[in-house]
Image 1 (tube, rainbow, N blue to C red):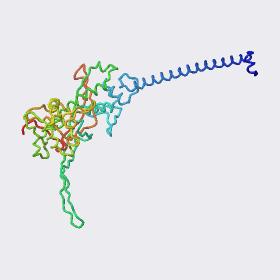
Image 2: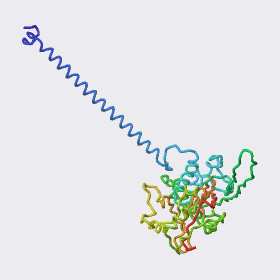
Image 3: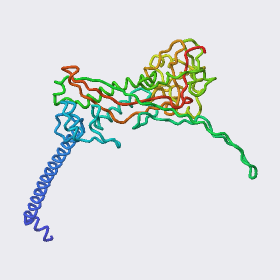
Image 4: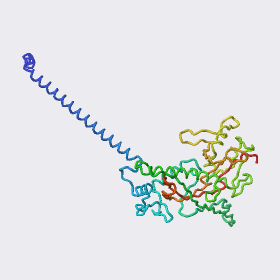
Length: 392
């Protein structure tokens, strides 16, 4: 029998086994303690990250007037002017935007801060009006001139030795788009303005944008050009077969006050191919209700709804803009326009927006007289066609 077996039988190895067990128990205990400590530190880290997320969310919210977060100087000055008429801060502050630097207007009123101006512009762009599909330019003058070359440069073939023959020269027209003053007059009670939790900047921007959007949408369609933009339907319209520059060509439906599928096809192909690529239909809701029932000879609907949220409906594959200022379907009405409006209609505007505070005219309310300058007119008469709900 070996010495090891003898020691096991006599009990001499028992202390060694106990020591091993005690060591293992101590190791397990320490491991559990380490595990608990790691879990505690992970929990603390997670709580810190949660607090940081909450702070970031709060910082991303729109600033209320009573917010303790630091605001830009122009925002503080504009907020003080809107709430209490305090223009001292504005007089000592120059608000700069795109090479335009002015805080005080000699005629009264003050430039709004860039953030508010951008908020209003974004609302105007998102509304259902010609603005969303037209060409929009910013100008610093009282008008904007568009040069249109509506003819083509002549061309000819020549060989190596023959003399080149004289070709035709293009004809260029100048279209001048004057800017007109657009105004809005929202009002609020002084008590509401004194409420520090009232988001006066957001409220003012929303009210101004709403008034401007409705006035612009109507003028871009039906404006007569007198103290307002000239709308697309204010220009003379002639049958597309005898169309000339300076007029809008139309396609008759052949049905007095009605329309069929053939008229939609005719107006699409009445437009030049270079414009048809970017073509858009413009009509109001009543006309859309009539058009979406039309079918082709095979019984297929010409109208198809957008495939995703926010996508426009399509008519013969072209997007449809619902502009409620377009005429309702009726005898000899021009209820549908089709064309490349980015080429056919130009909107010119000044980038600055002014607000004048009037606490006297409507007590106990405070009036805010907001003004901007904007103009619009057709810039290419070949880029837009109309559908006439009539026989000729």
